[in-house]
Length: 185
Image 1 (cartoon, one colour):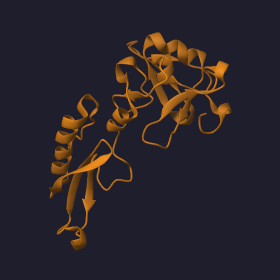
Image 2 (cartoon, rainbow, N blue to C red):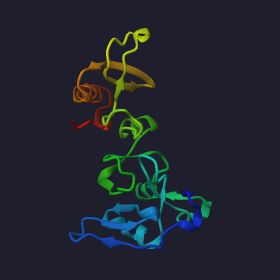
Image 3 (cartoon, rainbow, N blue to C red):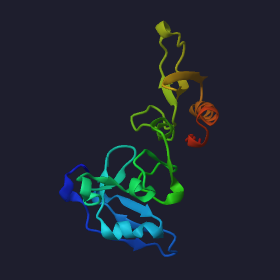
Image 4 (cartoon, rainbow, N blue to C red):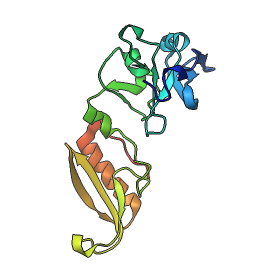
């Protein structure tokens, strides 16, 4: 159920862009959900709420859609007609255009995540480390690392944050393939 309760679902609405390439609607907490024109009926028929609005990726959900099983439905699952994980290629869970979504496992979905807001770096897979003689870190610097099959792989120490980001990009391309999210230094 969307945070804030079932009664906080927006009234059904649908707007089309000027070029008619997509449709959009506001969700609760001022989220904007995008869909393809053939899926606009979902926006016209059901009101949508923002699920997980304070997290890195929010989704559109409705308690009114799928009343027969008395649970909330997630818009991207309703569009693709799947009950499994869906990966949003651009990382925006409210962008539910078909060319932005693909079925994925939990691990594949996690590979396409953004950098955490609490990170010491603006780049994914990069963090700042202070000198710690006990741990063989002799000087301050940037560390690049990547998670592969649940294990963290150390990629190296770097003087520049951008170089550490590039090291992560190479490793992500090699290990994550099409699900890799790259840093853009």
